[in-house]
Length: 192
Length: 192
Image 1 (tube, rainbow over the protein chains, first blue to last red):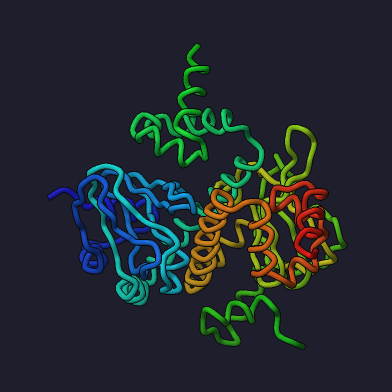
Image 2 (cartoon, rainbow over the protein chains, first blue to last red; image 1 turned 30 degrees about the vertical axis):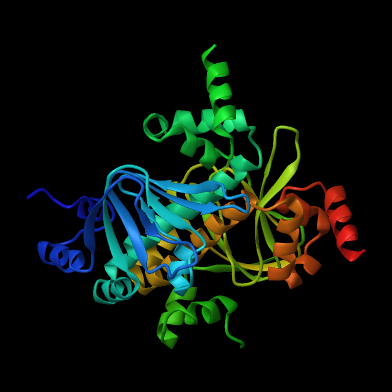
């Protein structure tokens, strides 16, 4: 059997024994989902962290006009949740949905606590993950506050070319805070 | 001698002995700064994490028009850095400056590594800090993408009333992505 994607990812940060691998995996569930399945509902308790082994998830909310707005994507090797709601075991501010058919490892809040108690070295793993994620979020806030919509798209396309190919364009537009029509216009302009 | 603010904060997350406290503090420097001192320069290596014991720091950048734009504040008990630049030991995307006279604990990158090696329980502390910070950043991205400028201000004022009193209004405007004039107009309107 090939190694779990999650374990390969953890091994980028920690040295773990065969025994520890089995112990760690014991706390996770691995599920396959179809495209557009909802994993977390806004206003309901957010009880899980999700790790994408294959596919793509989005974190979104629905604004006052009923429009779905994407706040974050997660592809292979990314974690996703409403981390604040998860940490405080409060109702979620967001929905989480599969963008493609996906394979996702998840861990419940109580299993997460037990995992961290039993394998304290996993604190280092999650500390590193969140440190990067928070740093990236601050940089994203900078871009939002300094780049034009066109520059945001170019920046994103140049940093994540595979991603731009892969994600439906209306979702990419939502993530960049554009209408799909405006994104098409920018792309047309850049090609001409 | 009264207990260090940093240690009191760590004790919210961990149980630590007197001996561990001394060991942990050994890796930190505590400095007093005047208002408007620069702690980190953009485009220079970002070698420190900062913890505010007293006062207020801001993380900002200068846009193409030479305008300072505030991306993040930190008051007492908050950590601040360009976390991505720090983690990768790369040039910083931001400046860090004191907003008020401040007392700040800082730790260098090499001391941070040593601290985490020597006191692995500190991984749990930083994991919790970053988990909250990242969750809050996602929520902030949601607000930016869903609230009007006026609603952003009201939201912020209601959640952080002390903060709104304390921070110079031109900085608050910068943080909310407004001109100082527009912020004055919103405040006048809400009072009328």
